[in-house]
Image (cartoon, rainbow, N blue to C red; front, top):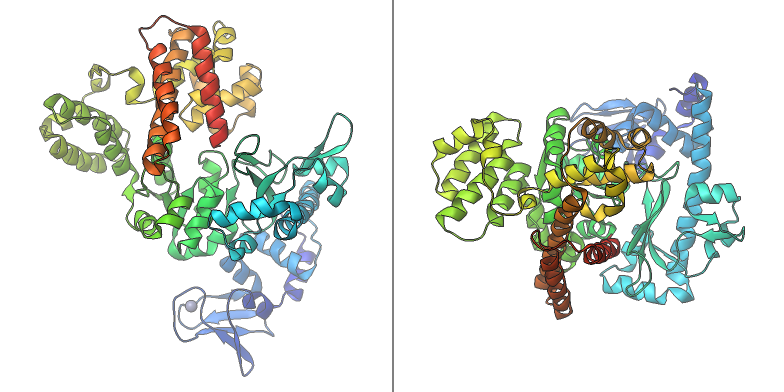
Length: 587
Ligand code: ZN
């Protein structure tokens, strides 16, 4: 991939280094030079100097130096080609690419990006001034968003009308659909995709508009959040909300905070931590990690504790090793998201980020806390569970340090624990009196996937499953791929994201002896317990007593589908339907 040399030369010629630098720092004219505080190292007196005629910069403090393109690469964390593209935009140069397909792809993205940008502005103005946006404005005020935040994040309002945006944009049908902003309905008329929602525009790392997350107002219809569907601009396995604003602060701190929601990103910034990004309705992917490590080497996961614990551990360790990263977990109170905490107790939020737990430490603490009681039996079980978590870590020294901690906390002999950690097969010999999944949801979820893959059981298994039954994001992705491919394994492997495809491929080679209905019941109970925990945490956090009847009802449902109860398909289906609805509301 490349840009035609002539065009690079033209960009170089037209780019004004002072105009570029001025967007990021304050410059003062001194004789024939411009000087300012160096953006690349901390200083109180200016040692950063620009020669405007030659288009060069130099820092007498840290020896940073280069031309305009280099300056854009450094300040914006871009590759050479991206820096040229950025400058071309600013200087009005139309780039030609050495590869024709690439040039056309770029043109197309520009066309779509321009349409999304117009939508951002229209929704935003509608929120600021629309007569129908009063409720949205009141909602945002009540959630702690002032006018500054609304403008800074360019929040918007999608009116509750069929085609208000489409009429305003007046795009060709094909462009409207390709941006995800709307579609052509059965009556062959253009219709808006987002209706009656508060709009959070999503930008690429360079600040180009690519899509939206739309939140329904309390009491409104449909899922709580709806995101732009997959488009040429918006690929949800790559998109990170807030990276365009967070990247400079993340690079300065060499740390990025990863959370789950738009409001969390804004909450972190309000609390003085302007280095947070959010995945948009997916778990963290390899692509996200690759993108983020361009800015920072330390990732702070600020998820709900259940979600953080469920982040597939092997992948985190693999990322740490392969990309030379450090992954830590913010110690957040259960059931409160960072956005709420930023408003109610910003000090607590800052402390959670300033003093995080190592990823393994976090998982070990969760394992230890999951078992109740102080009896010798409880301590032994606690030690077993923690050991299983420690086992996943690839580094022997790290493992051993945690073994010592666990031995101490559980009052068991440290050498015995070490022996168990070394012992092959120790994992299967451990007797766990609790239902299989309490140790980890891994195994039944994989069984379900194997049964859904196998030609003999597929017909029975697939219709019994639902996404909500998979706690692990990767498993859920594999399941989605299977469903999308109508059970066709080869297509599923091809269309799935690489990791999920790999998993499907591996599972297809493994034997499975479980019974579809039994496996589904195990998953259903696990999902039910997760929901119960969430409801209890929500009740503990909010004191909202209207939650109590739900917990009672759910408890009864779970008893009715106990492992030893007579299988009752209708009740199980009902429970699954309810859980699916809850998940939909939450997402
Ligand atoms: Zn410097």
